Amino acid sequence: MAPSPTITLHPAASPAPLADNGKRFHIWTIGCQMNEADSAKIAAMLQEVGYRSTDDEEEADIVVLNSCVVRQAAEDKVAGKLNALIGLKRRRPEMPVVLTGCMVTRQQEVLGKRFPHVDLFFDPSDFDQLQRVVPELAALDDDLGQLPHYYLPAAAAESSVTAFVPIIYGCNFLCSYCIVPYRRGRERSRPLAEIVREVATLVDRGVREVTLLGQTVNAYGHDLPERSSLAALLRAVDAVPGLERLRFLTSHPKYMSDEIIETMAELPSVCEHMNLPVQAGDDQVLRRMRRTYTREDWKDRIAFTRSRMPSATIATDVIVGFPGETDEQFRQTLALLAEVECDKVHLAMYSPRPGTLSARWPDDVPHIEKQRRHRELETLQEQVCTRMNERRLGTTVEVLVEGKAKGRWTGRTRGNTLVHFDDGRNVLGKLIDVQITETSPWFLLGDPAGVPR
Image (cartoon, rainbow, N blue to C red; front, side, top):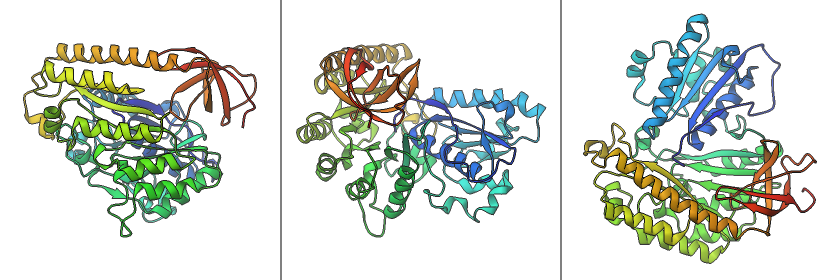
């Protein structure tokens, strides 16, 4: 998943199925899109038994924090948020405080001593544990974790326009820097029919764009009895009536097959956008990272994607300052990104995560040098994005409108480029053509050029 931590306060994730029981919940989420989906499912579960969401934790009858440990900065934010709740818990000791997410797995005892005011720690996606502090949930099912996702929809967007749908949990790779496999376990694919039913239910409720999620999303299906695949799932979901756009992330270069790319090019709903992390542009660094591919392998997948979808946009992830990374090896990464010209690069400075292989090695790239390399890549990417977006000046793009930001409507193209525009009509959830009048490295500005659809 994208490595840069994001924090979201979750509003209602589904229509209110029961009368308001007078209780409120507050969910705070940091981390990847999988966390977003998990938090939305928790919200839907609570709504199912009559709870309502609130943005004010002071009003809440239960506070749930969904944590991330992929970077030290994310873990520090979680700890800070937990400590900030101590005063509220003292004033209202009856209010349960719950912590879930990757920070929790195999750490409950340690966390219990560190944060004694927390009432419940539960592993990612182990939703049935919530019954311990919300007994009303027992009325839904003996095992909430086994309830079909379309009953408890994973609509993690801030509106009903877009939704995240997990399709595979865990990860079988053991990249030397990554804590995720230790916290989320081995790969477990959901049945294809269950996913299709969930997407159909979301579309019936107004969702127009769905993003299929997995730590290694293109490994989907290999563990199912019927030996399915991501390509087969894309074809099945594309057939859902009313679905306008379909995306998936995050992929691993080893599993980005010709079949998947051909399927992307073939299906009308699948967006021309690929998220394919490279992490480093030097083969020796990639081997130490245990990434199981070379820079040429990654370049080949990007080239084939662009040959089949010339308008495809590319996003990638890069880590700078990995243990042992020399300046010359960093220059290989810089050269690779200059050559390939990605539309989006998620940049991160390496930080050792306890329990991973690389945490045993000397963190020998000084922090100031990591910052310098990070800034150099940021500067390069700003130049690349400036050039790429300038080419879009005067063109007309199709935008799915997701909401408003600073008084302007905002949405994304099929290539996942952010677009802002003014329009006096209510165009939320509509597809609209926008003529681009201004560009920047990070977004486009334009005027509506057609009838909202």
